[in-house]
Length: 418
Image (tube, rainbow, N blue to C red; front, side, top):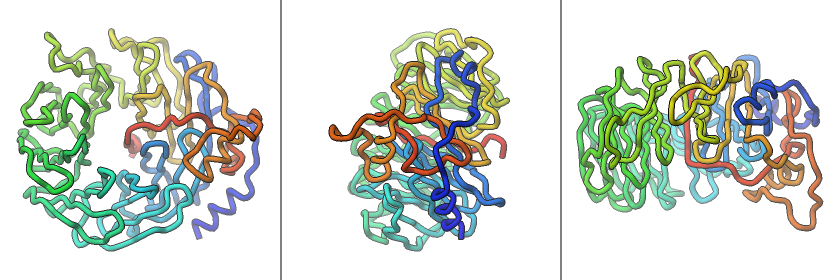
């Protein structure tokens, strides 16, 4: 019934202009302009609980275990499907071979990334503790049974598993040929993703429940021992450790020079990423800050605890102006590497802002987004301008405009009001 209602809502939608979810003048003060805004159709008892950016697609998940797929560059709503069952929270999915893979405690569900057509579903023989991640050939799921598992794509059984002796609820990360996994006993495991060959094991002094991150500098490990670690990729040796004022319950947002970590007692903390840098590693703390979203013109755009969008100077940590009220858009989706802000709300509103002066969206791009991963119009098609606004009634995928790909690395956010 929910899917029928969703299709009916889309079929009746029309292009229209409406009130901005965030004030245009206030956005301009932080260097942004509205790019697109939509409202996904929810039933009376539904609400959005989490939002994830996976490459170029946004996934909005609901309290009753449904997921909406939205093309991030255009705002085109591609599909809505049930993915959990039993009202389980839905962890972040991954993309493998043109498919979207979801894992909830009882099962794995796979859909076509573009069309949402069902591809595979099977019951798990263990309770999943994390969403899946992939190395392109297989995907991996951490278990509440103290193991993590490797599944070949298209099969319903694990080809290997590794015992951690404690629950895995922190989303693992892959960098190069290695898989890095944190567990609630405080240990980090590194193994080769192809064959589980052990690379190294290191321990922290507290449970690991926040998601790991990795880049060429190493693996970023948030621990409930009140520390964020950078561990070397090859040995696991800590390259630095930053002690903060409380337990780290979520993963960091990593940018080339600065790592942003939230901890309740400190707020948003900016940490020098370069392990060779001497002196104080904490650059600044912004107590009102809740989540770093993206970088723009020497500032980081931050969603605050009281629901404002603020530009914070990267060097000084001082706000540049009063910022803009997010008007209830309290579910942020970090997209640190492309100067794009994504925000969502429990009532189904989704908002995208990009730097002032960006080229507006075009109808042809949105239409292509509904058919494939191509978001540029063909040379034969005219580049007709389009209204870059959709409102609660403007959810028709074929009527919404687009732009060059702006998806980035996978990110996850949950509502801060829950």
